[in-house]
Figure (cartoon, one colour):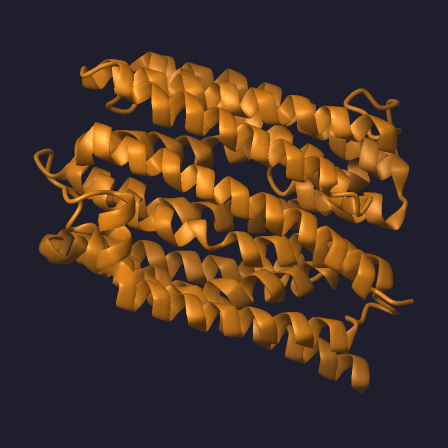
Length: 420
């Protein structure tokens, strides 16, 4: 079977949508950075990172499992994943709401509640999009992504110019973020219906529920490690810095990280298009070698190019997208450039590990990577606070390198075992 047309079509939809969405997002963040300043932008970035980690407990790797079952035609197990998603969201909403009311982080409660709700909705839109990916029909996700980003750009990027009060500007930003997630989820849900994907599927049997819970555990563990690894830097930076510099450092690092994330739409689109293809076309638990190798080489080349763009153009990108008040972000962005090649190839390597069913081994690699990141961040932020931003960026690169090595070892051992 020729994989190329389907993969290229889906990659085309996702990459085009993500390109437009990232450009809109950069416009929004450029506006927010200039209006909110380092302190206001730091608070927004902190709430985003912290509550993204909390709300992920309502998803716990289920989108990957949902894609796998949809792509393999296992409808009953796909329905079970939907049911578990509903239950997890209810539990996290209950306990997360109590946590925000009883022991909220140092931020206005209404802002935290809006961001928490937005993150729960984001979990649903990612879950629904994973079903579209399992069907290899990603056009609906593409339109939903662009529409959501457009709402955020117009609402937040434009709305913050309506007031000069920082509190009012933050509320406009958080409301716009919530509205964007609502629009995205509505459009995702609309795209699901013609494909027979339903938020209210038939009740699965007890055996099917138990099987899905067992299958979910490694995806949940690996996914949780992954989202913490992506978000923990900024949270630790704000929590471990002295109060005078906490929001400013979070704002500067948040600006640098947003610029890095803007370029990750390419590897994310490749991985999203590749995963269902690997599930469907894989033979006897083996990856299609030529397809996988080609994707890996393309990602490596793009990652190296991205590293050069970030390292040599850090000052230009920060000045263009964040403004003159974010000078601390320049060395941090240059240091984050070292992470780009590893981030790019890990999208493909991780996809291969999950497609082969090696989730627990992948979880071990992610755990080692996360531990290095956390302990490295703690050391540099407490012992050398003046180098906290650059240190956090370099430990991000080091942790991604460890993850790359781990994925390569897993795939190599798997191939050798198949050949023996």
